[in-house]
Every structure is written in structure tokens, then in C-alpha cells.
Image (cartoon, rainbow, N blue to C red; front, side, top):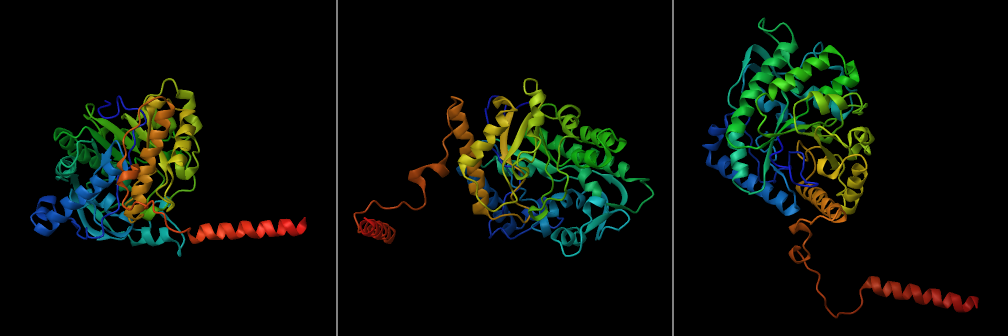
Length: 423
């Protein structure tokens, strides 16, 4: 159900995570949210950081805001994105290196590379008993964010099946990883239903593994079909919220984790088999590879498509005109009413700094404005682009010419002398 983007043409947003303010130096480290909020230092910093992030996103001009993943610990390469549920559900214990036998081939990288350091440095709990839901407090985190704005706040969470890539089984309750993934999907579903019941109208499930697995095992493999079933179980009963499916090709410390990044094998899986209303894809960092595949469904697209108008992996702050060019490219294959513009992935997880994230986000919003006006639609006011609201205003004085101006005059005089001599 389109509860947020139904009547909005080219809505702008970012994927989810946001760089922390430098003073937001507290983490939860597995403790319940209510326990952390009893600490007055954590309580003040968490709420103030959320307010700061919401203010940044609003000033940047975004239509749909996020909670920034500020509940995730500030840990190595964003491990807490996966780890937050695993630290809180029943059935897990400890913090261990994943064994060589159970490590996915996708996660093996040569020594001396950043991805090797990340994936050998991350620790994971063992599965030691039946996995069962315990509260993750998503509803409370969403309320804290939504209370600070009238704009819609989309709540995002790691998909259960991607967590299953890292877990070793140390109990006879499970004969294989499929059973583990299924029970995590059931546990996550309980949390998402509680989030819906709290009033959240837009929920994003992040990184189901269909695109990775379809490229590895084939789109018709039993593994892919099982993961689709798990995903649909995870989002069961969420028919009255706008459900987003986020996919990219990795973001631990801004790193791409796969070489084959084509969506061709998984396109129809995401569009037709997975429940949901919006599919977000990584496009900018991939030079919009595969965007033409949507052309065959242009007049009958079953989901809205959210493109990445900026990359989360580059530190160059994109300009609005560049984002507008990317939107125009996407519009060749996707109708305006079915297109949403975001970042390829989140800016957090040990990613870029706040200033770069802010200007990338504002470039998304301003780029959408440019194209909206070309389509004859009204532009949205963006405080970040208001000349009267810039932090520093250049004075209109009557002083002497600047050094640059003098240099230009001297250069012109030299050229005139040479011309006369030549004459």
C-alpha cells in the first residue's frame, strides 16, 4: 500500500544510515533501549543526535526522512547493522570469529585488503538454542524520530536472511541454516508488526539476498526460491504500510563486496515475487547499468523503483545538475510517477562525514526539483539552496580589484604588447 509516495512525483530521500555527530559518542552494546535511556547522558545524546539528523535531512530538502540507524553501535565497518537483532533475540550466545567451514565464498578476500580485515575482524554469536523474538524497540526508536518532524520517517532494518550468512550452528535444534533463517524471519516479523501498530507507515527491509544468490546459483535455484519464501514470511501482515525493499552491493565501510553487480537475474524476482511496494537499487556507483531492463515494464511496472542518484562510496559531493542528468536517464525507462530518487546506500557504517552526506542529500532534493520543473510540476522549497540562508554572505563592497582581477588585467596587457610587436 502506497501510504507515503502515492501522490508524490519524484520524491527524494536517502537510504537510511547517517553519519553521527562527533559528540554522539555513546553506543548500546547489546543493552535494551530502555536500559540505555535510563542513563541521562545516553538519553540526552541519543535524542539530540536524532533531532540533529532530522534537521539536517529537512534542511537538505528531502521528502522522506530516516532515523539514521543511530540505534546501531558505532563499531567496526557498521557490524551493528546486522548485530543489533542478534544481540537481543533468544537463541544466540557469545562473540566469535566465524569458522572457515561456514564462511560464504562471497566473504573471502585476500590478506592485505580492507574487506579481508573487515570480514575476519567481525565477531558473531553462535546459534545455541531455538531463536525466538525479544523486543528490539523499533517502535520506540521510530517514535523518537517521528516526533521531531511532520515529514514521514521511513524505518529501515537489516533483513533476517543476510544475517544468516555469518552464523555457526552449535545446537541440535537446527539441522541447517535454512531453519535458522526461517526462525529469524518469524522473529523479525513480530517486531515489524509492532512497529506498524505504533503508527509507522513506511518500512524498509534491507538487503535480502536474491540478487547475490541469483548471480551465484541461478534465479531458479532452490536456494533463491527458499529465500523469497523467507522474505515474504518476514513481511507477512504488513499490507497496510508502504513496504520498501533496499538492495545494493555492499556497504561495510563504503565497500562493494561483489564483482558481478548485475540485477538482470533477479529483476523479475524483486518486481513480481517479493512482496512490497518500492524496490531500491544501486545505480549511480554502477553507471546506471541495467536501468534499461525496466523499459520492458515501463507502462505496467508492479512496484515503484528507487534509484541511487548519488553514490555512498565517493567523497565528491555531487552537484544538483549531475543528479538531474541521472534522473533524466532513468526516466527514459521508468515513468515519473513510478520513480523515487535516493542514495545508492546509507552514508553511515563508518562511511563519509556529515557535511559530505548533507550536500549529497541536498543534491538529490535539488536534482529532483530541476526535473520536476521540466515536467511542469512545482518545485519544493529547499532551505539549503536559499541564497538568503547561507551561513556566510559575500559582501557587495566597492573595494579595489582583487588579486585575481589584477592578474587578469596584467595578462590582457601582456597579450596586447605581444600583438603590437607582432604587428
